[in-house]
Length: 162
Image (cartoon, rainbow, N blue to C red):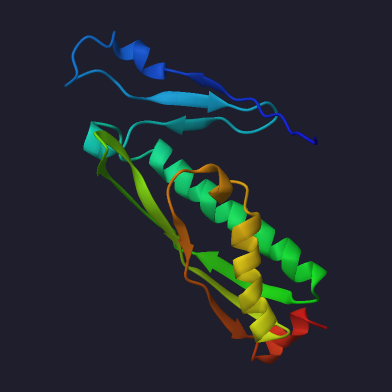
């Protein structure tokens, strides 16, 4: 079985502001280091007394879902001769109390892309990308996709497909 290993070092930097002794006041700030990559600073969501100016785990989960889908989709398009001119996504997620636990209950990806090639195939490849996305396959809540695919129409867009 082929496997891939990943490593991240998380450090609670909030300790510099004092111990976690009072729920109302302790710092939720952390840093994450991944070898060879820029440091990430984060905190909890503001709803949980975190810093709204930095990323929180909920943000990072949505980014992971969205990025995995996009990267899988791009690879599938290249393999099928579809040229993707532009791609963006507005991922949304919902957390709620379920079974006595706060958890994500769904995420919805809204990818919008402009392609040069067969629109039907380009749209169908979103379904295949979803099926092949290892992040979506790893979570225990539904991840839906609502893609919008349009054809390249301008000469500038057509230039990319030459």
